[in-house]
Image (cartoon, rainbow, N blue to C red):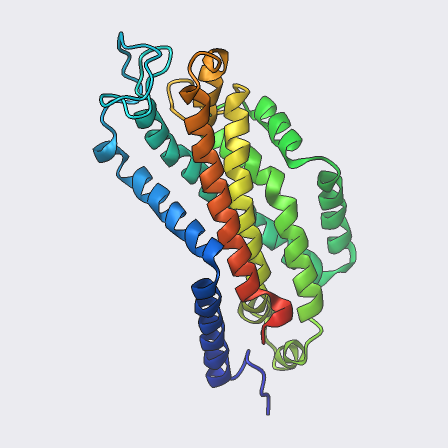
Amino acid sequence: MMSDTAFNPVVEAEAQTKRRSRLRAVFSKDRKAQFGLVVLVLFILGAFLAPVLAPYDPNEMTLNMMSGPSGDNMLGTDDLGRDLFSRILWGTQISLFVGVATVALALVFGVLLGVLAGYYGGWIDMVIMRYIDLQWAFPNFIIAVYLVAVFGTGLLNVIVAIALAFLDDFARVARSMVLTLKQEQYIDAAKVQGFSDFRIMMRHILPNAIAPIIVQATVSVSYAILGEASLSFLGLGVSSDTPTWGLILADGRSFISRAWWLGVFPGLAIMLVVLSINFIGDGLRDALDVRESDV
């Protein structure tokens, strides 16, 4: 009789309960993770409520140009008289959307490649990993810049470019976990029972490999946000009439010596979001670390 969690619903439920308890315990003690969670929730709420919270249209130009923070303009205005607070608030939508969409796309295809390479091995593993090794040889941002240059600018192209640049990270994590898990006895038992390869990979391998993938996804979201901001700063991101944090920085870089708020506030928004996500990722790593769990 098999006693592995993959075939014993009671044991599997107990393991899931233990992981949830560990997650709550870690986050209840980790002040940085708590801070990151609060800050990220505030930014998410700001993104969803931007149409309500923003006092002005983000692209509305006025004669009140280069005005510092005041009662009328909380964070000041830029060189075209546009309200900086409204632009940053609307830019939060783009930055968070790009971060989540990019990682979701990279996760799906990267994990798929990693699982196939690790499970089947042989020539499939060789072909996939040679591609991953080739991509690994170049920095992610350089790959993203090249792909945007090939595909062209625009929100969709930016998401695809950054996702392809991060694909190798997920593939490596997934492959390493599969190589370890496929040696377990419950995988052999599943094969003996005649389960299909697809069922074994989806039902018995992926659930036990999800912890490091979640941690990698959390880290990648912050990198994706930085990547989008960097591409927009270089003029390779979304269209110029779409307010993004990188574009706001790019528009104000010529006036930072005279209008400090044009660089400080959008830079602070990027820093806070990236730090909060990294703090949450550290907490998840401590709570879900495979080496310390009972998975």
